[in-house]
Amino acid sequence: MGFTKTAAAAAAPKNARPTAQPADSEEARLPGLEVSQFYALVAPVKTPQRILSRLETEFRRATGLVEVRKKFDNQGADPMPKPRRS
Image (tube, rainbow, N blue to C red; front, side, top):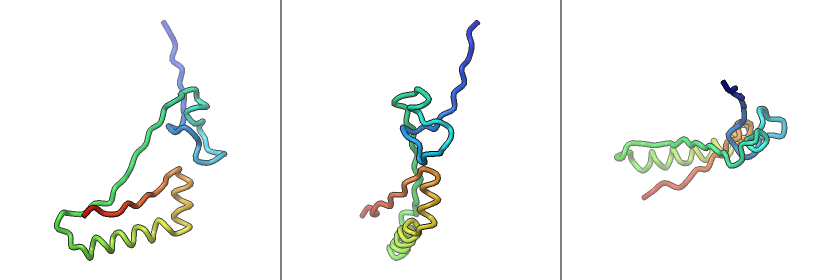
C-alpha cells in the first residue's frame, strides 16, 4: 500500500498578508494553483433605473470606506465595482 500526504494551502499564488497561514500554493509546492471566486449584486430586469443607480452608489460608497476595505484586505478580497450594463 501507499501513503497519503495531506497538504493545507491557501489557493492563491501569494498570501494576502505576510503572516497569513496556511502556506500559499507556491510554498506548498503546488505551482500554478489558483482558485478565485466572485459575488455579484443583481436585480430583477424591470428594476427602475433610480433604484439601480442608488444600489450602485451605495455599493461604491461602502466599498470605499476604510473599515470595509480593511475587512476585504484581511480576507484577501478585492472589491471591484463595475459599471452597469445598458
